[in-house]
Image (tube, rainbow, N blue to C red):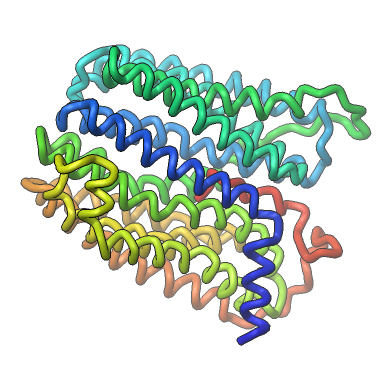
Length: 430
């Protein structure tokens, strides 16, 4: 027991402290942002803002694959300035076309989400480009073990978003809040680029960021995000007025449970990749799993115990009817952390289980499309999709990680037991 606790402590403290703290600050800042904005906007306006913010995150989540691939690139080839510049230029070019496409379909997005201004939808385009470059920059820094700098980017983003977003929401409403969110990404990118642009000698030729490496991580990351967020987007489409606002408020509180485990997952993933060929891999999975899942369960327990208090502190008395939703969605978020862990375990071993969250997301869409007359029905659809998804992926990964192996230790492992791809699990991939 003591040995297990010691291993868990090493996992928690082994280089992830700054990011864990930054994620906590970012989560608190996000809740403060929603608390103020939720009071300034009416329920329908807040529902619209929540939908666009979720779309922004949805556009950014596949970029977590860029972060992972860039981190692995530096871990394999070294932190050369030429390698970093080549990766940043490539990602900037790759992101321009999707950005233009998002801008072109902005009128359709405005109609689908019932937005009051075309600018609210159009802001998704620059957000996509900036977030793509930011994800790559963070990955390059993580590959070079500059965890403190990456943590600073999260703090800078939070500060800029609160300062500008809350200042603009009063005169400009939803648009002002979205401009503040975009400004937060720009501020984070500025912090990340400082060390990357600093002149430094290159000992090796510039290495290229491969689309194949990005694609596989993208399958895992995007599937997880869709599985955990599609309910909120569908809630905005099918509900209106107070129902929409209640669901966004409850989902915002509940999904905060996943923030810290996602940060910890970025540190656990390379340990899983290193342990997979070794006899003690199950121990690594269980220790890492405890580090990821226990904070999620504790957070959900606290929120579910006093949902009315959390809602009142954040939003006042306007969302008192959402207490039951908060309890349900907090439990869903806590159990989703197990799906997150299992998906990353599959990614670490090169397994096909990274596709399971996609199947879960499809189930969720089907259930919600069939029953969506109330926020409670949409939440029930999330629960109905979670149960089979969790059971299937846990069984498949549990069987894979308990199977005996005759493989030799990875030739890429260094003396610390961390593989050359240790930087591949960037914070944004959970």
